Amino acid sequence: MTLLDWLVVLGTTAFIVGWGLWKSRNERSTAEGYLRGGHELRWPTIGLSVMATQASAITFLSVPGQAYEDGLRFVQFYFGLPLAMVIVSAIFVPIYYRLNVYTAYEYLESRFDLKTRLLGASLFLIQRGLAAGITIYAPAIILSAILGWPLEPTIVAIGALVILYTVTGGSKAVSQTQKQQMVVMLGGMVVAAIVIVWRLPEHVSFGRAVDLAGALGRMNAVSFDFDFQDRYNFWSGITGGLFLSLSYFGTDQSQVGRYLTGRSISESRLGLLFNGVLKIPMQFLILFVGLLVFVFYQFTAPPLLFNQPLRARVQATAQADEFARIEDQWARVQADKRAEADRYLAARESGDRAAETSARERLVAVSGVADKLRTEAKAVVARALPGVETKDSDYIFISFVKDWMPSGLVGLLITVIVAAAMSSIASELNALGATTTVDFYRRVVRRDATDRQVLVASKLFTVFWGLVAVAFASFASLLDNLIQAVNILGSLFYGTVLGIFLVAFFFKSVRGNAVFLAALTSQGTVLALFAFTGISYLWFNVIGCVLVVAVGLTIQAVAFQPARASPSV
Image 1 (cartoon, rainbow, N blue to C red):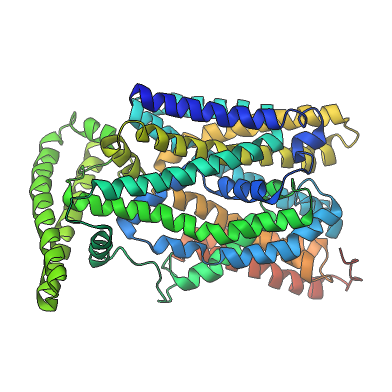
Image 2 (image 1 turned 180 degrees about the vertical axis):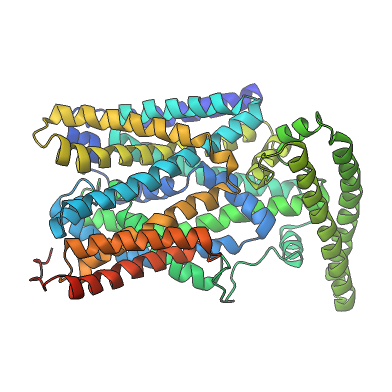
């Protein structure tokens, strides 16, 4: 990184953090202000904060790499989100405001009992605490790869910085900074797309780039094939994605805490609907940036391994010669691939369908040879360094930024990823600290705690969860793909939690004991399915939710005396 890049990163980051702390200066002296920000935020801030909480550094590292290797089909994961925003706005938001809760799980005690509230809060803490570790690990990859820093100290440094920032600012500071961070993130990705198109050869226009991506099977945004083992298709997105989004935005405190800071129900609803309208276009943009990187590397030879530090380690082992042989073959195949890409574009331009089909077949064939060489290289790495993670899709975009972006824009895109990391981690730690304080400390441990004690406890629990996240981040390198790892973690727990809330809203005859046992049954079943079957993780949300409802109704009817319905809330 050049001096200009450093100035962009440090200047933009300092401005965003300083702005957030200054805007929240009057809200950090009381527990109410620290945890909920004083109920003052308008819908644009809420909407951008909700988007920024979900769009972590993982989004900007992993999603372009996902598109590079697998095309646009990951966008189907979000197809159920707009409908989920409507449902959350219509059902969840009014109930939370009416009960004036700090966390979503307070409602579960008013509807069921204390143990159900604590179970829901515990499932959130487990899932989000682990996910926060992955969120810290993602930007650590960047700084480690770009600056050559050791990974472990980088993880600790990032964790310490975000813990300090979150503990100091509280909920309102988190939301205020996220508004600025989201603007930087979206602007940075638009600039990245423009620069990549500019970097393409002169004869490759934007339209031709799209044609080439389609010829190689990357323009696969929608698939109507029904397959339980296929992670991304229309059906898994519109059903599993809907249930996951309902769980995340309706019951996950990291999101509930964002829209409960609104000055009214209307402001919170508008913020959520704003997210519902913009989320799919935003994800499509990020995926499309990865697609453009893929097209760029059809004309410029990409590295055999995008994880360059790993390549250096292999070169110091007994397998160095074998790896070098594959790299020589890789260079020749890349030259062939560029020639075939040019032939395909020329044939398509000529309008000769037979020539186009033939050229496309040759292009696909040589791309298959390149993919085979990548697989062989990763096998060599696995033999040279047993136990190391060879999947390098999370390094693809950052490798391109480092090698091909102009000075200054490298700093801007590093800022995008750092801003995303700060926004998402801060929301997670703020929510983890608030949930532990409100649902456990103030409810179970110290029911007579003063406002000052609650404030201090919130900060201490935020620090605690930050340390847990840093510890788990040390294991994140064992995961194949970070964005999938976060979504899998959510799917393992969210369905059960959503089921509890749906029973609370719509099945008034079901009481605490029945839903508690149903939730335990559901959670055990989902974990077993994950461990022993090949079902796509998106379906776990549906399965977990349906099990809670069905088992809860059955247990209530069979094992317990019918109870008078609790009053509607």
